[in-house]
Image 1 (spheres, helix red, strand yellow):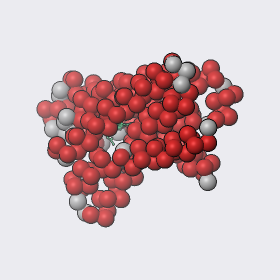
Image 2 (tube, rainbow, N blue to C red; image 1 turned 90 degrees about the vertical axis):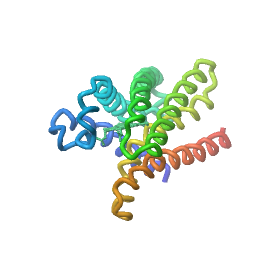
Image 3 (tube, rainbow, N blue to C red; image 1 turned 60 degrees about the vertical axis):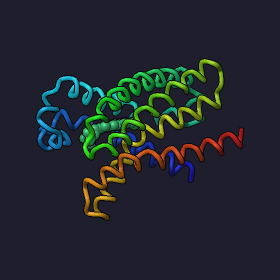
Length: 202
Ligand code: HEM
């Protein structure tokens, strides 16, 4: 069961992690960017934040799952450390730009608040995870990085929840508002359960 869950999570992370590449091939009017105002699209700060967010968010999602397999980590500790450094750098860039973009999110104040909270928690759990490993606190490091990746994984759950809610409610904007919270709150609850089990077995 645990193995099936891990494989499913990894495949979804790889698929959605690579998805931002489509911005290099698809005309912008056929993407999410067509939902933004021309003023924002000509704003160099917002546009830089957008591309920084999707490129480095994609990298963190694409590589982050590899950090969780016990046997891989034990066999390839140097690689674990290298992937970890790339992950932390990518999350830092992507989360700071996401927090900024959150203020301009579609769906108004409630969805903006959802994305901004997620961005802040993403950044903080990742940094605290780094501080714990520097102190030699392995269990706390693992637990914080589980929370961090639960946030990263919001990019996947958002793209599962949104079409589901939209088809159930036939209300795209209400669904978007709900999804700005639904994409990460259950992920953090799942991470909490995983961490409790881990703490009980170590
Ligand atoms: C986990 C914290 C994250 C936060 C807080 C966040 C926040 C945001 C925000 C605010 C937007 C703009 C939404 C709008 O203006 O309505 C956005 C769009 C986007 N984000 Fe993220 N994001 C996160 C993670 C990720 C990750 C890990 C990826 C990696 C694939 C990603 C990929 C994208 C893409 C591709 C878009 C453009 C929309 C689309 O093409 O579907 N995000 N994000």
